[in-house]
Amino acid sequence: MGRLLLWLASAFLATALAACDTVQEYTVRDAAVVAPGAPAGPDPVQEPTDVKYYPSDEPVRMGLEHYNRGNFGLSQRYFREAVEKGPKDVTAWIGLAASYDRLRRFDLADQAYGQAIRLGGETVQVLNDQGYSYMLRGNLTAARRKFERAYSLDPGNPVIANNLELLNGSRRFIERPPNNQP
Image (cartoon, one colour):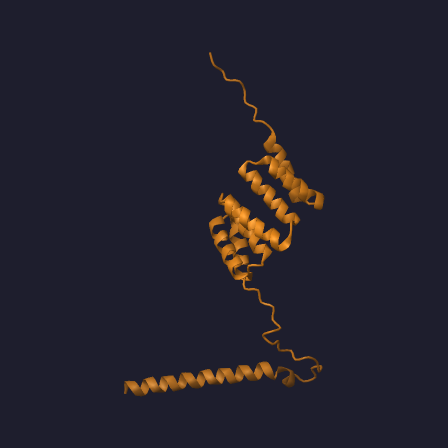
């Protein structure tokens, strides 16, 4: 009896799956034929070779989401996954570098910025992000050089202007009142 039930269940499942495949295939392939009055044109069904799929899209999205929430460890993990899946994805490399900056892994950040520059050149975003990286490290001279280079490429960019202002504020000495010692 148990074998009979198992066989019937298998037969039912196989029939159901075959029916789903047949119905789905009919609706997708024959949609242009079924739609009355549809203009004749190219086949509305895309072939798999026509679809542009970038394997790093989901990890990049998750990396950005976690970065914006301040979860830099998680953002680093997602961006690292993105560059492993799409090693030519400049956005993923920049996100990885910025995440490493926030984790104070400046050695790894430099490597990621280097890869982003090799792939996409010294863009305004890379220069600005590198400037911020140097500012986080306390290397204000290198930060100023990067910010000024980015500003020369895009003088109306408010983010770069803000970072230069932040840098100028970092350069001022902290004024303390004299010690009140007897």
